[in-house]
Amino acid sequence: MTGIMDILYIPLGYVIKVCYQLVGNYALALLLFAIIIKIILFPLGIKQQKNSVKQASLRPREMAIRKKYAGREDKATKQKCQEEVMALYQKENYNPMGGCFPLLIEMPVILALYKIITQPMRYICGISAEAIGQITERVKGVITGADSAKKVLSQIDVITHVKEHFTDFTDLLPENFAASDFPDFTMFGGAIDLSATPSFNKPGWLLLIPLLTFLFTFGSMKLTRRFTYQPPTDGHSADTKVSSWIMDLMMPAMSTWITLTVPAVIGVYWIYQNILNALRQMLMYKLFPIPKFTEEDYKAAEREYAGKVKKNKGAVDAIKQSDPNKKVRSLHYIDAEDDADDSEAKDNGPAAHSPEKPEAGFIEPAPLKDDGKSKDKGK
Image (cartoon, rainbow, N blue to C red):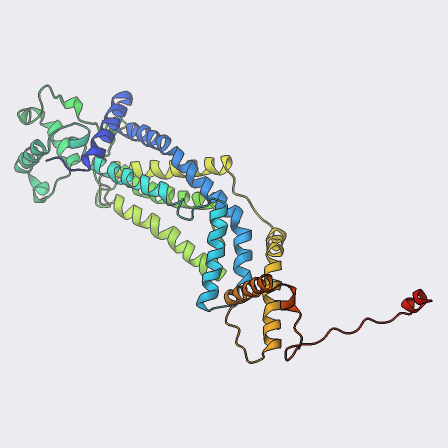
């Protein structure tokens, strides 16, 4: 049966097969394949980095807008603040979700690679799913000893057994299929078998793979974070550092645990991914550096929006002075009232601002001081 995801699995499996034919070593073939995938997805990485650069460049103005509305918790003010931030984003052609899109494209590829690596008979050797099922059942029937207790055999386990007893399975394999068509999972002349699963019950070189997985995952996360834009947070620095360290340890620990439950070849590919991810991010950082701003830059952005703040504060004082019992709801409504006053003035003309009787609370301007010059002119 052919699944809908085979549209992605089969072409990628064919690429791994070509890589294996070129280098003749499965571990090196996976490295070559990982490099090819990174090159194909490189434009998406550029797009993601440019989006981070844009986000960092807008940070001072965004913080100035948020500071302008700081201290107001009512819904209308929060909505007004968010509208101004989104208007800034729209004006500068910045999409807050733009950095997630490349990850959404890359995730299916990563999942597909896991499927291909764990099912090489189907996607690298090109054997049908029906034939694989029959071969697996026959392998189960001839396994003796402790391995007979296995209820589920991975395709890597099956390949290892079939290669040792190839003539017993030729009737189930495609025509002209040779034992050499199966990928060879051994390294260093058979000293390391990547088809086996690392285990503390069987100490050996394979245990280096979980250890290296932990080290490279931890190092990759540290380097990637260092060369990736991290928006400043409002949380306590101590809490942030603790959370960061927990994440830095949990992810590598989880990766290490997984490598102890799957064939070692999966761990090898994981190591490749971590190395290439760190190198790619370092390259992106050099090609498209993240702008850095000083405290003066943030203050300059605040001064840019200071005029609006003063206008709002002046409107608050004027409204309270004319009517002490009037409740000022928020900066959002203050802006609306200012606009309404301006609109009324335009409609009614200058007379609108020259009432015959001053309103209650209106303070008349003081008369100009006579400095004697007018008398001199009269003479």
